[in-house]
Every structure is written in C-alpha cells, then in structure tokens.
Length: 355
Image (cartoon, rainbow, N blue to C red; front, side, top):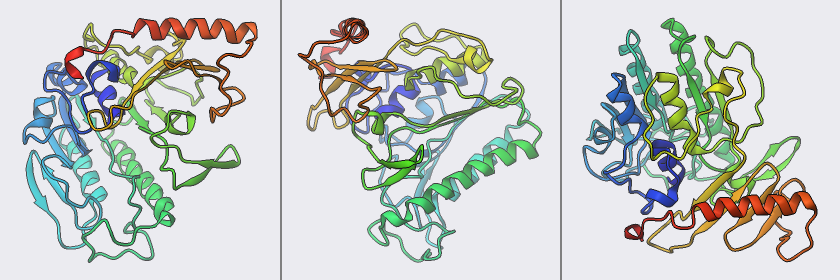
C-alpha cells in the first residue's frame, strides 16, 4: 500500500502517507491527470485506499473492478468484488484474478479506438497462497482464505499471474493496438518471507516489509514496440514515484509541481535522460498503529539510514555489517556525505498535521 500510494501520486510517503488503507482525498493521482487529458480511465484489482463507494472515481478512474474497496471479502475462489462501487459476490467457483482480468480485457476492447489508461494492481501473487484453477488441488467450492493455505501454491499463483498478463498482451495484439500501447509491469514489494525462490542461480529468501534489497528491489519490465525497438537491460535507478511523471510524459500531460518523481521516458527511448543519483525512502507501513519509521537514502552501492546506519550494498545487500563509526575508504566517505545531503533535504518534509 505505501508503494502504490507513491506510484499513484508521484510523491514520497513522507509527504502524504497517513496509514494503511488511506489515500487522502485531497491528492491528485495519475488517474485524475489522465482523465483530465481526455483518456478513458479504468482500474482493476486491489484497492485498499479508502472505503467510500466513489473512491476510485474520485481519484480519476471512470470504471473500476476492485477487491477490498468498501469491505474485505475473499479475493480468490468465490470472491467478492465491487464494480464501480457496487458489491457483487460470486458463488459458483469463480476465481477473483480471472474476473478482474476479464474486466481488463473488456475495458481494453471497448476503448480500443480511443486513448485509454488502465491501472491494474493485481491481486496475484499474495498470501494466503491457495490453489488456482490450474492447480491439481483446486477446489471450486471453498469460499474462505483460511483453507488450503500453503506456500507450495506460491509457484502456481505466480504462473497464473503470468497467464493473466499474457491475456492482456494477446488482447492488444488481437485488437491491432499493441505497438502503440505502453505496457509497464512492476513488482510493488519483495516476496513474502515464507518463500525462498531462486535469483541468479542462488536461493533468495523473500523480504517483503523489510528495507533491504530483498524487500525493495523488484522487477520492472516495459514494452512499447513502436518506441522500444530492441530489448535491453537498464541499470538506472528507478523509484516508484517515477511512474507518474513517466506516464504523463508519454501522454503529453503536464506534471504537477509537487511531484517528487523523475520521468524515465528518455531511457525508454534509448536516450540518456535524467539519471537518478540516489533513491529516498520514508517507510511506515502501519502508520498510526505502531509509528515505526525507517528513513534512508541509497545509490547503486551505498545506503545511509537516518539513524546513522551505513552499508556497502556491493558486498552486503542483506545489511548485516553496519559501517557506522568505522574508518571509510574515500569512495564510501564521499557517498555517505552525498546521502546525508539527501536526508537533510527531507528533514522537514513531513507535514506536522499528518502525525
């Protein structure tokens, strides 16, 4: 939820994150901006950002199919969803991620002849890990997220997510609009801590909720055939605040002055662009309940917390060896000065009325 707040507003959480499940109605989202530019706008998947019936529409999404808007029913087998704020419960073995995907495909089909913007915060993959319709032990009669829970289903859920993305790509192809559609796939946080997957040929323990790389370094895949002619890997730093200005730049929409993000549209075009020299995070996932705040800045190699903890990520991505108080090599020392300057920049950024 903190990540999606940054994604939608282009602002760091320090400025506008109140608590889990709240998006201030005074905020402007990329939905508002794209709707204002004449785009047909839709959202489907997970909400968790306000209980009002009109929340999605208030934030610029003309059409919506969402889970956990005004209530919290099951999301997988026999789910409860809300279509434009109207609750609908399914009881005949339907699968929530499929229903949401059906909405996405229908939205794209109906708006194929005009400019459209679809935000698809997927329900998959997320615990509780349960069977999908492609799993051998799928049970179409269950209606509880407390049943059939097992980490063994993580792989099935991830494969099903990939299948849903494939449906979107094929629909764009079928409609003849694939080349000029900007398609962005982004992970919003690290994998659940109960999951050990594989990365670069080694075991990789999930770190969702942590502030090391296992909780914050996520996949980002962008496809835009008319613009990105050849596949390549970019090493530039990207923040979740950067997506709003990037989408706006691609659509020719003016970006609000209070946005923290930096557009990476030039990099998508193969140009140098404005390369980030650092990333900043203010993280308090359950703000108001525990008030725990972790604040830090980092670059490609070094990371500095507000508390003074300092790490060399090049050799210690798990952050087990705090370099605070130790003699630093010149490159580490200069990086620490730079990152301290970043933290100083945001020292008073938190509006007092939010706390």
